[in-house]
Image (cartoon, rainbow, N blue to C red):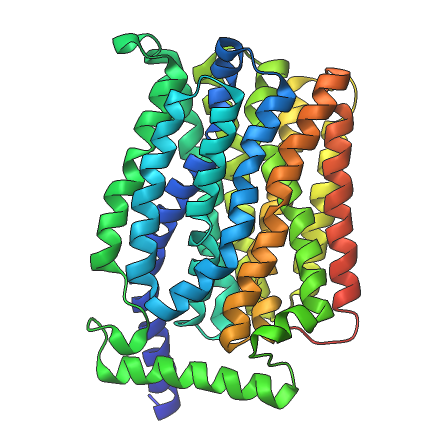
Length: 434
């Protein structure tokens, strides 16, 4: 065997070792985070009637999470860069677990808004922090595949969280005087506290601090990251300073792309249980099981899309075509009188589209930002993009209150996915984003 072959095999083994150590645990963390973020979609099926909430009130409460998220995301990511992932992510998870559980005490719309806002403040540092954290370990040629693997947590949260939430609503309502939705918030707030404590022992801030790596493995990872930095500088793509984030038009366009994709993602996350209840079944347990189908389809397609994007080095059409498919599928699901089965099939393709677009998206901004600009830029793009998490449930709730239908709401989601695809095609028309 040649020296080059030995070197290549050593590199593969090193990255495989890092991935097995970090990614399953980070996926677990994100599944827990996403369940606590969107479990109001299931709680709504019972809570709305108990508390006399309108769809608009629910939409505001579900979405106001992202207003708090918006205000604290950039400073939280800067803090992670300064203090390290282990000492920052652990307390974030522990605190958000207690806050999520406290949603069980909701009696008024005001309390619902406040607790969701505070939950957004606390959780703001987690997702962009992990995206930044992965840039401390993986070179650009591995990054899309790894981010795609990490983001399967969104789909996995739907696969696991839906049936679990449906079971809690079906079987625990009335136990010890608590409603099913109260048990849902209480029980699903416990895992982040436990896993947050585990973060202190599992995560290392960067390769140089990882005692579970050999010296040669640490040197290889550091060398590959340094080569990435040199390549960015050679292409003139590197933006290191904080002001580079806000002076760069492409960063603002990335925000719009992410906004449109997230509109679709949270349209599904917050409203899929309601759509199933309206068109397929009223049984909470069955709603939970059926809701897992679109997310399972999305998990498979996003992994394939991310792997294929890394293998070919192509980003443009892996993002744009996925967003276009999502747009068409949302529009198809809005066809008046569509049978429930066909509606779920259409929403499965919509989920696959938006999740596949997400799986490749982060390769674009991380290819042009580094240093302080990367920490702030990732957080800023995620902050602006995730405002769609407020806009999406709010707009859908308003439309449902006005029309008592999902028709126009689904068309709005289709339009935003199409917007994202068109901006990606515009952004990448000249430069080679790899």
